[in-house]
Image (tube, rainbow, N blue to C red; front, side):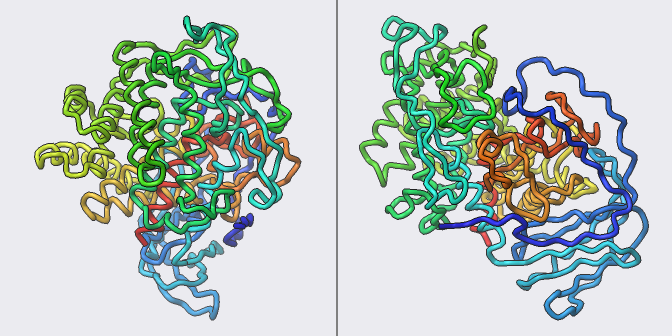
Length: 596
């Protein structure tokens, strides 16, 4: 059994001249979370906050978990002044490097004056200390050939901890064990989803799946991108996953753990399709969010709610990918995935514009969308790779969408990723060149942000939205596709900078992944972690991250985009977790560790 320890890497920071005060309050506990990504309702105005003055001195910001030997290694030093730095091996106190800080500059999202210490030339495994000459600033770090292995395994295992219809035994869950919750065998069809064959009140069975975020509901749209991202992590890094034991009940079988975990969610997704017409229910949910309860205590009636175009196309795309991924392990099941994928596509063809509309008696997450070109293109690409039927590729090309940084509201890049990395020789050189150029244009723009940033991280003010850490990680995912296609290390270095940002190289001084780093979130908006009476949260979850919408009404230390974050249950707008935020974390960690 794999165990996880808070404070995986010690980092010493001393003589903080301008501390950042985190104002914590007791406003949490209402159990009223909004969407786990971009809200679909008008946002209330941000709480009045006086913008922070520029920080003149403070903590060194760097990856708190550890560096791979050949990774780019950068620390951010707040404050002005031209200074030197040294790197010391803490085992024998020998100096291994001396260098100069970069010229200081202001990073707009935090309004900090900062400079950079680049110590990438230090590549030997060991424990080190970064000292800033002429100051008392110091930070410890490690270089290790498996620096990202444990955090990857915890990020992947977070899905096990969020399983519905499963008791988590102590053998696999350690102190976070719990009874089974939500059997979901007697789910009712909501009036919004009624049909002749399945009228309102009709009972369906849809067990398993993952709890979506801090709540206990299950949403097809968010499951779509999450499940896809984990499956391509396996496809792109299959050797890395072959013998990787993350400590789940299925670990001793002949199937990679990541595929066992994904199948738990696919089993639920299959049950969300109406077999009578192929349409897919948007979500399985209670009418309202539950309170601060453990899963087995949250017993309100659950419903499948409205079929939608977005849910049906997400389902079609995911099942098409699953038919390819699982064919070597479950050939008959793979054929069923393929059948369901095409049936869903047929429904979507006949129902091209059915947005999800929240019923009056339902108040849980919406994942609302009104533009389905991206979902049609994604599903068409996956169906082409599954069937090799030209009609699907023609539909993809007719839509002529431009790839963007992926997220649940915009899946336009996912078809490009699949066509470029899993095309089985089906595409012409001209098609490959066109698709590759579009993806590389997107990635090159992200590299430019990285190179222009005072923090050397490709995040700008408008990236600090609900789930900003997933924006960073999905940018890194796109960059790793570009690196796979070109082997241009600029793409890899920029991806590394975004991962370092999430693991501690940011103005909040948090490693945003629970259980990893010197300072990680302790009070995430996650019902199990809130209600289980255990001090430490479930490990391996990435918090949503800083953003200054402040939709939850909590008290924040700042109104600036990159510093508006608080480690409090109250803050579901910055401190909630979600399956679609962890998925790119798993992918990027696997990509970095496997390539190493």
